[in-house]
Image 1 (tube, rainbow over the protein chains, first blue to last red):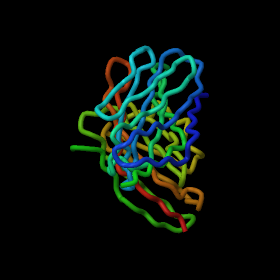
Image 2: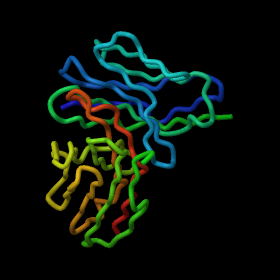
Image 3: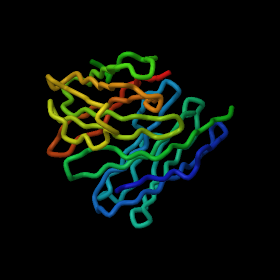
Image 4: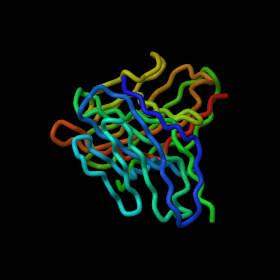
Length: 116
Length: 116
């Protein structure tokens, strides 16, 4: 079974600075998707960024980018120019591409605090 | 609708009672998912619908949990004989179905269930 590990329960960053959140995963499959979701206190999970495993190029969405290291099974999220609104729980998630079930497997999350 | 909606937002019930949680997916999304998020944890998969049928119910913890989606749109998660351990946030997500692999999952705000 696939597992996702987020080793940092909490992180903090100063406003306007850069922070990196770590994620590792375990799978025997060669093709899959990886995601970072943000969950503010409102509880709604919001997609931040996604990466297809077959793509070597790291995904980027404005201030958010990933460092995808397939061989190391690592998928970290970098937030540049951090803003107060970035404060939330961040979850890393894995999804297989084939096999009938499209379920997401989540890590336990990292709580990000942004200090003014 | 504009997004996934879930009702009620909060539900408090007594041990042993029956509860129903409702999910309205994004219009046109054929895939629907239920997840359960316990305090301090990432969401855990419960069940996945493709259209009206449950394509994967491997995450349902026991036979007290049941979900339906009779017309391929709205879904109801039903919990019988609730226990205190059922207390959690229940999240619903929906996605398009494209070429045999579902697209990004969009989440609702969740229902917080408290069993006294």
